Every structure is written in structure tokens, then in C-alpha cells.
Image (tube, rainbow, N blue to C red; front, side, top):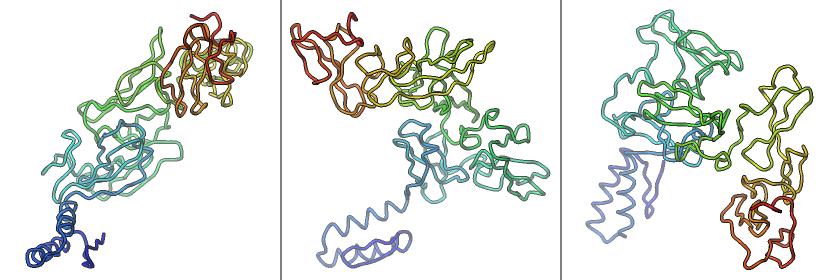
Amino acid sequence: MRISFEGIRFEAGFHSFIACIILIYHVLLIDLKLGVLLGCLLLVASAALSASVGDYEELCRLFKNGTKVRKPGTCDQYIQCYDGDGTVLTCPSNQFFNPSKDACVATMDNSNKYCGNRCEGLDGEWVADPTECHKYFYCMNGVPLEGMCPVGQHFDESSQACLYGKDSICVDVNNICELVAAETKFRNDKDCGYYYQCDKIGKHATKTCITSKKTEYFDVESGKCVEANKVECTAHSKENVCSISKEMQLKSDNATCRGYFVCKALYPVVDLDPQWAQCPEGYFFDEDRQVCGTATSVVCTHNRCEGRGTMLVTSSSNNCHNYIRCVDNKEVTEETCHLDYFFDETVEACSSKIIYDKCCDDRD
């Protein structure tokens, strides 16, 4: 990195430190701008902790904002996640990033396991590549020889074999819990009703938000199971959705107003892998009629703002007197028309005209 202050050009690092010393000396002798001195001091400080933006969406989408993940295959770098993106930060010289302490430290146990030669002292064994699930190393007299599992398979170090992804415990990178602090919870991107939690020895266990009585989704920011319609989800739970049937059925995803599952007729067994689909924007799924209907014709107590942008929409409560204020497809507030007025979604306003929309009529 090159920086220029008042025509003086130098590189970050040791040379920048020397340049700063010279520059500070001149500041003391002549009346240069204070901003030059401050800029130089900031440059020296930044040399101790450098940052770069990388493509870590696949990794950071799993974690809550602020999570620090040691960069796979390194010991002195970590990825800080915010809004699904990651920034790579480097510890000061001769320091390591310790996930358990969530900080850079002077020494770290088992550093060779992550950033050194993973085959040191091994012969005739396979070890996982910490950077990707489908890669591994074969150790020959301490020398690592890189290998790769067939498409769709992950390497499992405990069984010394490649397993199909669905049978693997690897999530994006091998031993992901060895890269973050203990007790960290993160998304299961295959089903919003499940999540993973790291233990103290670097392993992860599958947890669920689904019970026989209720289906909730995992909210990564709070680390809790919440109502399904409170979570932005693209992997709705397929558990207990379909039933045994001789005919194809459409079932609500029970989390959105537009989403539904297509259950195939597999009599006498249940379709355990139904396909998820959505009604067009402005239309909601009506399970009773098995169709996509206009929003005002379908009762739905989930997010009625989804796919509708910023506007006022009818609520499925209070006999059509209530309306919901939508901003960027999200419900902001639910309000009530004054006196005996009803809400008319066609004009997005309260009206003295009696409204009989099916989504709210006779609903307290």
C-alpha cells in the first residue's frame, strides 16, 4: 500500500515507520499542517492491524454480526463478519488469533494444526484441508499431498473417507468450530428450523427449533428460536409438512404469506422432500382453495408486506379496521382507522365505506 501526504510518498510497513520519523522531525522544525502528522501516526498504527475485504459471503452468512472467524489455513488472520460479508484482519507481528479468547495472542497451542504442516510426523494417513470440506491431504513421510473428493462429497477425517455431503458434518470448511469461540451458534442453511452450536473441543452439534406442537425458526442475531415469520428464510422447514395422499397437495410453508410446498402423491408413503414455491408478488397462497389469490382475499397473519415494497396494506385482524405500514417489504407498525372507518387497500386509506375483504372480514 502506498500513501502520499503533501507530496511525500512512502509504503506502509517498516519503511513507512522510518518515513514517519523523518516527517515528524520536519514537523518539529517547520510549520507543516497538523493533518500530515496525524495522518502519519494513523498509518503507523494501522501497520499493526491490517485489513482487507475478501469474498466470504458463503461463510459469514452463517454467523451473527460481529463474529470473528479465524481465516482457514492461517493462524494470524481472522475474518470479521457483518451483514453477510467478511473483512480479513491481520494480528500484529508475531501474534496469533485465538478463537477461544476472540483476540490476538502471543502464543497459541496446536498452531501447526491450522497454519503449519498438518502432516508433520504422520505417514500413510489422510488429514482434512481446513480451507474446504471436499479437500484433504495424504501424508507421506510428513509431506502433504493434496487430494479432492468427488463432486458432492466431503472428506471425513474420523473415517478417513469421502462421504456424501448429506452424511457429512462438515459445514463450508472442515472443523468450522475450531475457528470460532466455544458456544457459538450459527445457521443451518438447509433448514431454518435447525441450527448448529459449537462445543469447547471444536465440534458442532445440531439443534432444533421444531417441536411436535410448534415450528419456530432460528434467529442468528439473538441466538434464539423465534416465530417463523420473524426470520428471513430461504430454506423453509420441510418437517411434518406433507401427509400420505393419492393426489398432489399444496401446503403452506407456515412462515410466509406467499410460500407453499408441492407435496407429491407417493401413496402409501409421505413425500419427505417437497419442493418450495412462491406466489407472484401481490398474491398470497390460499391452502383451502389451493390457489394463489389476491392479498385481500387470503387470511394470513405472517408478514403481509413481503414482496409489496413500501405501502399500506390490510391486516387480517379487527374486522378490516386495521392496516399495516410496510417499509421495504417489512411490517413496521399495525394501526387502526379512527371512529368506525374501515381500511380500503385499493386507495391505501381509511374509508367510511364498509369493507368486506375476505382477509379480514369477521376476524376480531
